[in-house]
Length: 260
View 1 (tube, rainbow, N blue to C red):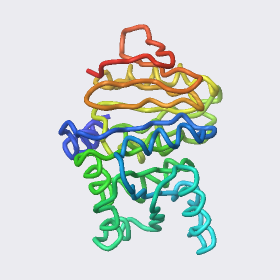
View 2 (view 1 turned 60 degrees about the vertical axis):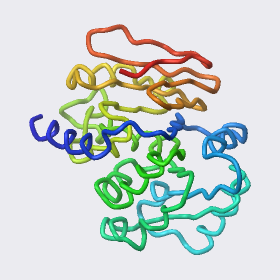
View 3 (view 1 turned 30 degrees about the horizontal axis):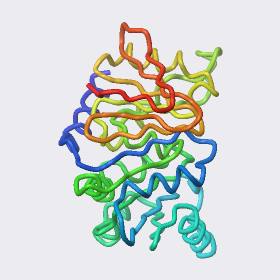
């Protein structure tokens, strides 16, 4: 646990400033057209450039040129962006390169697609790309994602390992290899698909082991929008807020919560 705590402190130090931008954290199972347009509206008016990071969907092999073009076309239509850049790093070295990460300069919006949280953490955390994503927030833009793409902005990842004979009742709670997220929300762990996959007990375990954390459980088709220290909820489900030693708080659509 000492190593875990040190890794978390490193992540928190990187992006501890209060950014002026917006975070749009979606619980998975389909981003509606209205939600996609709502996300992009936080980037401001005029012609918005959207960067899409779909790498979590393709952990085993690079995207083909046809897949990249389809992602660009579909994202432009779904979000209503004037320009879309598709960014699919295959190695940490590529994600840490000035050439790859530099595509995010001048971008007003970043959307991170769901899939493998382990792949996102392996390729992007601690790289120049992570720092450029943080810079989008710092200059007043919007960063969002769905499922694993909503988890990675947190400072701590609830990453599950396969079932083990030592824990037959369910997955091992934490995977120490992938414990650190981007730290765009300091001292926060984010878990999507929340009540649909009955993850309340997991999050209670996380905040019990790490009392410095605030746990956010986001239901499917639902989003938590964070700006200036406040979180609001949109969509049909709820966002559950966990703290050690306290009963969780269930936030309904339209509810607002002041982050500590």
